[in-house]
Length: 217
Ligand code: ADP
Ligand code: NI
Image (tube, rainbow, N blue to C red; front, top):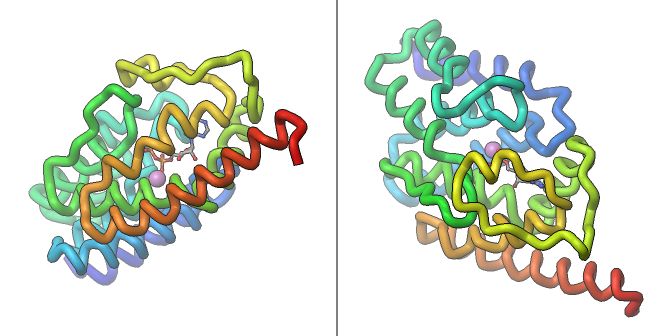
């Protein structure tokens, strides 16, 4: 198996599959996650081939994007890696990362079991916070027909992945249910640093948003 070729062909597959997405999971999300994951992976001494392939494939089996798909068993990614003749060991490692990477609710453990996984999870989470994170959250809310904000609907700290998946609350709640919690759950040193800047920006945004909502300047 030629690693360069496998990466190139995987990029083409993912670009083609996610191009039309308007829920914040389009190709450019994958592009940003790959770039950040490679940067964090270099600093952490991770296996960069695994990091790059996992970053490229991490949303291919996501339940949020593909009806009836389940990242618990990332079949599309596995079939693709088999087709690319990637070794079973590397394929298993990448599928394990895809299974573990997603946020599963405020009170649910989503710790990664490998260094490469920690790097990919940090990169994915960094793209969920800050200015881009805010934009993605509202894009997702719009794509799923959610309200921006409803002061009568309280945020929920989900205790199970099932409950988290079923949730259809307004987008502002998502900040309290997930996005503001990510800073404390970063795995890598560089990831923590970037998260801290993006976190502050989100807090500023929320404060301004809620002030305007209340009719203040
Ligand atoms: P994860 O696998 O951790 O869910 P993804 O890369 O699949 O990460 O994307 C998660 C992003 O999707 C969130 O950061 C947010 O932008 C959007 N999203 C998911 N659920 C919601 C929601 N209930 N309300 C608003 N945005 C959401
Ligand atoms: Ni993602």
